[in-house]
Image (cartoon, rainbow, N blue to C red; front, side, top):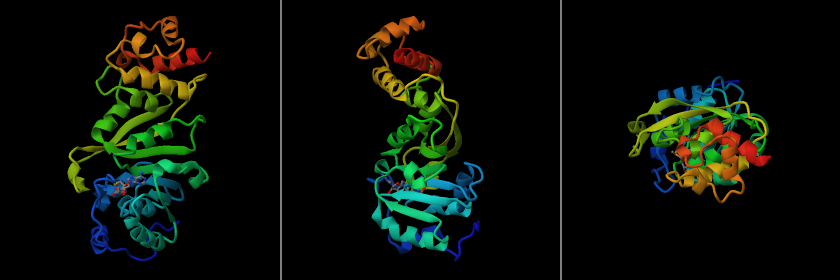
Length: 278
Ligand code: SAM
């Protein structure tokens, strides 16, 4: 597959200026323009030549260009209609390897759009980032159709995703990300790399699907962690009491119900969900 555009494109900053596109805070817009950085991000999923990538929020298309340069076929969902003319130019320059869907990423079915195995790569808008992430982690079928997630978050969120048990950052997000997948911080990105610079630093998390422990209902695990960490300072016997049988199950697998959620390891949450399902 030809990696270079069929016709040369002006630098992204120029294109953005020519279209009078200013970043919208309400849409969580912090753009990346540094091509070298963007190429490094697009290299994180591995060889993308001929692969399908689902991108949320291409904006003016900096990361999209890098993914296309890497040889990917990109399906991108963007909510901001002002970006569509820039993205249409990009699609034409790369021989139609870019398909843009205008709309809310929360409302689209990425599996159906991709139509086969695909990677998800995105500089996520902070307002829907965690909601999208938990959705990608929750499919009933595992392994999921996506082969990898390469996602830019605020650094604090990235640290919650990879956090080990017993740390302040450890919570529901860590359990959901780690119980049947591997999660790592692949790159830290300084706030000055963005236009406009956000208040906080960012980091890119890489997630690869792992083996699924047997006999666990993902929806039940999700509910248990929601309740447990929803009242993280309370003892488990209090925070889980609305889930029938949960306190008895804790005792049956040797977890002291006076412990707090943040001390319960990923394997212990999994054991609890497995026992409760039986
Ligand atoms: N990918 C670009 C980059 O790296 O420079 C822009 C990233 S910016 C952080 C987030 C993008 O997500 C913006 O273009 C914004 O318009 C878009 N966006 C915000 N909410 C969205 C939603 N619910 N669905 C799809 N796109 C959304």
